[in-house]
Image (cartoon, rainbow, N blue to C red; front, side, top):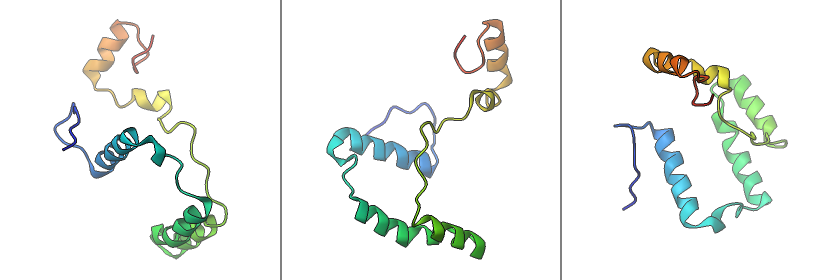
Length: 105
């Protein structure tokens, strides 16, 4: 059984899935990049149209099958947005320690 050191009592499904995927890739690094372009295109053609919640979104996702979106270089929030998620107590502590609110000075 795989176990993870967690700081929270619960996780949402997307976070739990990401943790499991990362753990599997850690266990077998050969899985990274193992899918060929033809298989990727087949999956896009099948699932992109399914992601739309209405006709306009379905059409937009169907267009993306031919020209897939490139992955982001960095998926983290920009620093200004990350500051807003701190509780007031932590924000005051960071101000007192002259930190920028996200753990850096």
